[in-house]
Image (cartoon, rainbow, N blue to C red; front, side):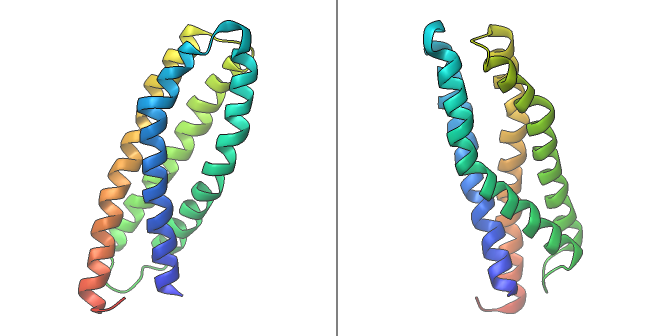
Length: 150
């Protein structure tokens, strides 16, 4: 059970880190090139489709990070697990307080200010997930060293 928990946490974090970098460097900047006529529809489809990718991963990451912080696996630093959970909370906060409102504005049509705000505030999530990746890799290494097996 512990190995499954650790694996789900690590996989969800690593996948979301890849997704957020693609979104930050490729996807969001290209929004400005969609064009006025089709932008609202494009934005709505983006929001619908990306949710199928990110929501299950984000939920798995949140739940597994919370469980691991509350009941640390043998050999993993409880302080670092709490830091990892704090980063997940930052990510969720940035999602709901910054990204979701900007997407709501963009759903009515392209808005340069909302687009710029979306791209710039998304760095919060990009950096938080990148730090989480390093933390998760370190914690999995701690688990291996302490337990000597997978």
